[in-house]
Image (cartoon, rainbow, N blue to C red; front, top):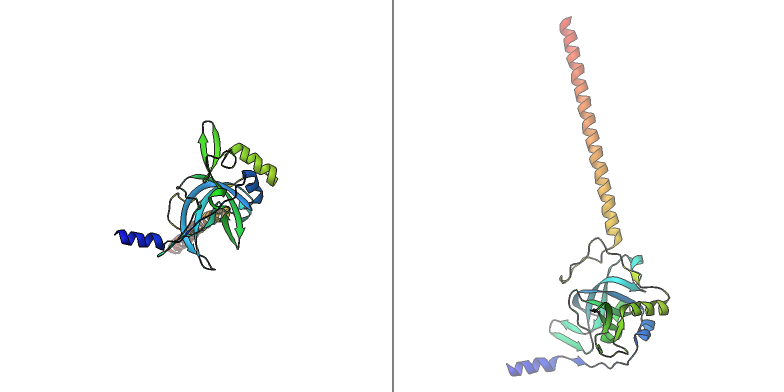
Length: 239
């Protein structure tokens, strides 16, 4: 058993990561996008060019640079290097871990049509309540006051000062995903789904109304024909 465990441990590639200390302000400036939300679930994928990546799916509450309103999305997939596919396990030091429902702030870089977590865990912050304040705490250096902690309201002011606009509130969609569910084929919920359903409902009401009107018309016509036939027979008998 011990020998088997050793073989497993030594067969797992582990890649160390060296981080260059950057203040939050610098990360905000370099990020292509910023997401504030909570973690839903993850899955592992094989990249087109080879290698394994972990897809982290988040529910967005606020964002900057992601154009959620344009694309009609309230969820986002963020990639991190490494993961597990079959017998292949690739571990990269510094990749953050999340608990379902956990509130986070993530700095994002766009690369080859995918969103990647910028600076791995160094570009990821947990949102925690401390007394009457909300604070963002870095996942790798939580106790370092220079790079690892900031009041959330100060973070919002920093984003506005550097990027020229406030964090945008992401509309809650009609079909939200449940926290902790496994992978799903459903695309991120969009406003169009709700609109399409409203149009369908209205169409059903119109069809039902027309059907009811036609049924009433046929009943009136049948009664009129029966009345005409009854009068015709009485006139014939009178003669």
